Image (cartoon, rainbow, N blue to C red; front, side, top):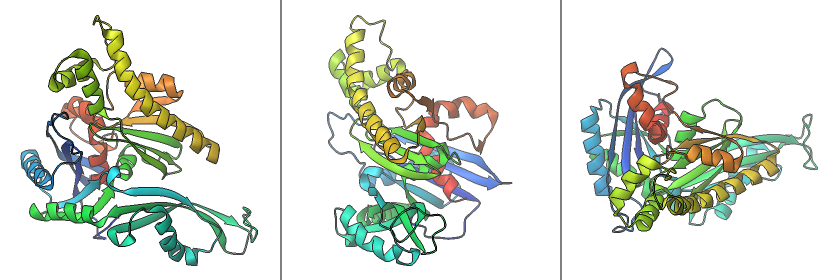
Length: 361
């Protein structure tokens, strides 16, 4: 969404501005393949007990981004930047039978029903994700000559102030913005690719989490969740009587495994209580989608900074009764074999940044 230029460059920088970190990936398109030129990551460690803000301040983003660009040795000025799902409005709209000629005009009016703010305050974009020919009675009819269709449309709106903020940050650093894109479009590109089966992607971040159902190559449903990695760390810190930083280290080392501790069962239950809330929302969305479309969601792909939490994949697999895999956005990227272990370790964190860079080359 929000293309500002039509001609694609050979090299592009994908910039994922998260709630507490920034990830950048510079890819080059050569001989029909994506090649990794460089990448970087910078995290701002805030104690969540001391801060209430979910987003980094503009000045913090500008400073952090400038630093990571310098340290990573970024050479291109052409960039694509992600927009968090929680900063946007996204809906799937089923429209009554109509012709293609009136679709754009109808969507202008439909947008007012689904976007809870004035349309003057947002940039609206949309994409047809399903189109079925129908007869004059509205019944699906492949031989209909009425020129009528049932459209299912993905409607997206982003506040203009958010767009202006990111453009201002880029301008301050001398960057040329090729595109702004919602992060679920980005991680879908790098993790799902051309797979046409129904797939759920869970982006389990530090301070925000989202899940997206992708089917037939299109986003069909997307939701934000309140549960995130930070909430798990806070629960650990409280139950173990330790500070946040120690709890964060412990979480990364142990994940869902606490057998060696005397209070291991209690600690695990504290974590699973939160994860089960997330599972409930995902399960409900999957069941709703399968019931509506008669399409089986085949698998769940884990992504995000907390996506590789030890034991999480097996737990979700058992709870949701579907295949669960750890997302790897580097699969379609060529890189030196010597850095494969490092890339594998950080893979879940870089799904958005890789997808952004792929978009524009």
